[in-house]
Image (cartoon, rainbow, N blue to C red; front, side, top):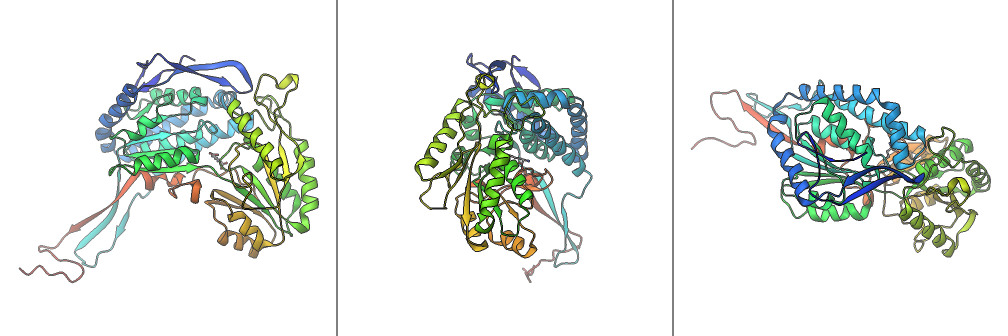
Amino acid sequence: MDGKNYINGTYVNSVSDTRFESRNPANIDEVLGTFPLSSEKDVNDAVSAAKGAFYNWCRLSRIKRGEYFDEFVQLIKKDREELSRLVTKECGKGIIEGSADVIEGIHMVQYVFGTVRMPHGDVIDSEIPEKDAFMRRKPKGVVAAITPWNFPFAIPLWLICPSVVEGNTIVLKPSRETACTANKIAEYAHKVGFPPGVINVVHGGCGDMLVRHPDIHVVLFVGSNDVGSEIKRVVAGFNNKMCACEMGGKNAIIVLDDANLDIAVNAAVISAFKTSGQRCTSASRLIVHKKVLDEFEKKFVETTKRVKIGNPLDKDVFMGPVINQAAVEKITRYNELAKKEGAKVLLDGGRLTGEQYKKGYFMSPFVYRMQNSPRSRVLHEEVFGPHVAIIPVKDIGEAIEVHNDTEYGLSCAVITEDYRKAKRIRDDCEYGLGYVNLPTIGAEVHLPFGGVKKSGTGLPSASTLIDVVTHRTAWTINHAMEIKMAQGLTVKL
Ligand code: UN1
């Protein structure tokens, strides 16, 4: 694929000659596409197209705007299989997960289409009977969306759909690793016939220029805490800009003494190793009550040994490669660090070197047991790979303490048959997504998605993004023939 930027309804070549490649992480010889490393001029053009389109777009009825998304979803559905294969080829997750990514994107488009005939504001009583008061939403303007590679289809749509249906216009800057999938999104927007400038896509390392652009009103970001923290610092310097950042996790599953261990083991394997542990919702800590520790550990290690690693297009494969060489090196460093920090290694994982693995970034799971300690880096830092710790605890109180002993707070799961214990976890653990007898992954688009502490700004994305991309305005009308004020204010002069 010879990729271009998509600006003002046209595919355009960047003024920059520098290009980057998107390669298949399961076969690094395979180049899937090349794309421009966009320059400041490209960013300025995209933002000015979005700014120019805003006035007319936000004046269409919301129902009319929603109809574009009905069209959008029909196109995606037709291409579902081809898209799933592209997602899998570009980011390396198994084909069932590639397909789930596309389905999650479809759900987001369907969701926003469904909202346009639903109530959209509030009718609010006034102290004065002659006054009618309303909460009405107004779009904020031009939105920038900066998205990661691990959900190359669903996450851009999580951000584009609510923004655009509410009347904003948008510039998407996708991850370089998955530029082909982003290009498909531009292709659908073009085919649907969104007015030029409503949806724009710029490729390559230009996120910083986009965030600093004075005409960007909202920055939506999903990715690492380092980048998100920098975005927050930049945005704080502008009066007319805000951001919602979803950033990483050090998520945990808590296995209590009464847990159904089959559920516990399956939930743990899915949470730790789906997407090769590279979801912001992946679990890298399994906090296990000492009464069930031996049995859980044995079953978990046995099941993990059966995890099939290989070509992600093969339906039986559970774990594909990690995304790139930098990821291999980072995960390997953390595996080594765990050993240095005194981990009891239960399964020594790392880069796979066999003939069938030599063309890709394949890694096997690394599993260890370790007592929680404030000094341990591996138990506190996000690894983003198939690297998981089993942390023994003596009771539910200690489980909660260990759970909260991290700067992150995205997703949390508890495995228990006791609803009172589940309630204690619900109330005392710090998280944005909580699960009972389930994995930490697999959130659905119509629920709020967002974390606390280092995991996010507390402005959840997906369906609840409406509150980030709209202003709630108060609109009050007087029906009397004179002015009547609330709060006992008089109008006597
Ligand atoms: C992410 O990892 O960045 O809840 C998003 C889940 C998915 C979304 C993950 N629906 O695991």
